Length: 132
Image 1 (cartoon, rainbow, N blue to C red):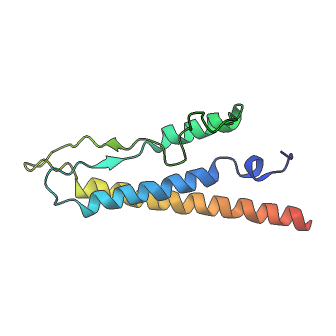
Image 2 (cartoon, rainbow, N blue to C red):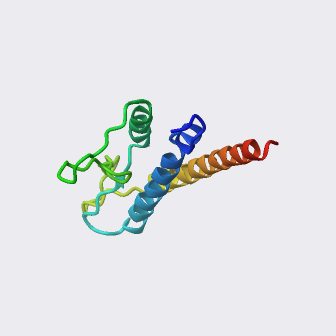
Image 3 (tube, rainbow, N blue to C red):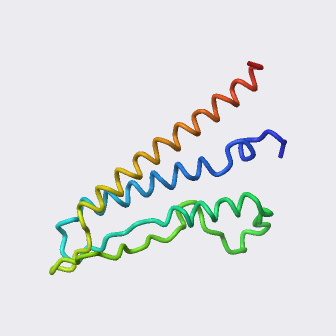
């Protein structure tokens, strides 16, 4: 790989954006099922995923050299965790609308920040290619 490749230039930021998008889907699903009996609220441990991505980018790459080798986990291979409710409902539902709205809004702002950061990286790379 060249010294100025996308992986070197962008790092974990594209994966962070994809993970935040997937987390948004999970949180929206929680909100949509807030009245469903026995529904358990789920979430993603974003910090753990990004820590793993950082380690993966800084360590040696493992490649499959044979189709019979076991495949590794993909970008969506992380585990969905259950949220521990502060006050579970009598019907077994663990969704707290206020918490889910808060987490969803926080994730949306983080997504926007990640997108803007990635966008500025692309602008910098474009300027470097043009010689600006």
